[in-house]
Image 1 (cartoon, rainbow, N blue to C red):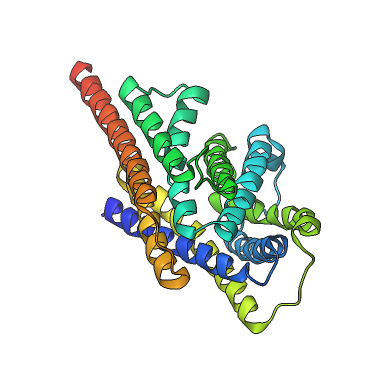
Image 2 (tube, rainbow, N blue to C red; image 1 turned 30 degrees about the vertical axis):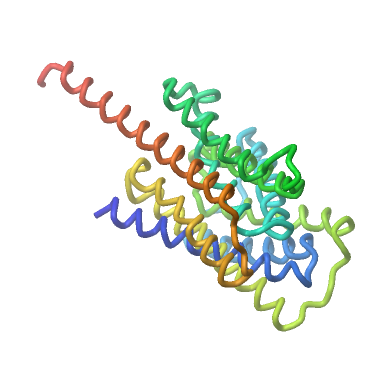
Length: 299
C-alpha cells in the first residue's frame, strides 16, 4: 500500500510540475523571466511558510548556514533559472526530455561524493543516457539551438540540489527546505530583471497564469515529498519519467509542438537508461540484503 500510495503521489507530482512549466512558458510571452521568478518565489515562500507554522516548526534555523544548505541554494538558483529560461526559449518537450537525465547525474554524484557503489553496467547506462541528451541538443549541427544548454544547466542544478538535500542537516524538514528553496528565487529574479526586461503590470491573463504556476508548483513539491516518504525509492522513483509524457501532451495540445524523430529517440534513450539504472540499484540492494541474511547466524 505504501508503494502504491507513493507511486500515485509521484505521478500526480509530475503532472503538477508539467502544468507549472506550461503556465510559466505561457506567461513568459508577456512577462519577463525575472519578474516571473520573483512572483513565483513570493507565492511559494508564503505557502511553505504557512505549512511550516502549521507544523509548529521554526521558519529560520541556524542549520541553514551549514555548507550543505549553502551548496543547495547555489544549485537551486542554477536549476530554477536554467530550466525556466529553457522552457521559455525552447520547446517544452525538449527541455523536459533533457531534465529526465537528472536521476542519472544523481546516481553518478552519489557514487563520487557519497561513496555509493556503482558497477560498470550502471556507469555504462549513465553514459548512454548522456548520449540521449546529446541527441536532443545536437551540438555542432545546423539544428543546434544554443538556448537548449539552459536545460542542461537546469538539469545539473537540480541534480546538485538533490545531492545537497541528502547531505542537509537532519533537523530541517522538507517543508522548511521548501521555504528556503522558493525564497531564494526572489533575489535571483530581482538580479535577473535588469538583463531580461523591466517589470510590467500584470494583466488578468498573465496574473492567472503565474498564480496557477505557483499553485501547481507548491502542490508538486508537496506531492514529491509524500512520494519519496511513502514507498521504496527504487519503486517510486521511476514514475518521475511520467513528467516527459505529460510534457509531450501539453506541448502538443497547448503550444503545437511536434518533436522530431531524433528528439523522441533521445528521450527514449534517456528514460530507458534511467529506469535501468534505478532497477539495477534495486537488484543490488536486494542482493546485499539476501546475502547478509544468509550469513547472519540465527538469534
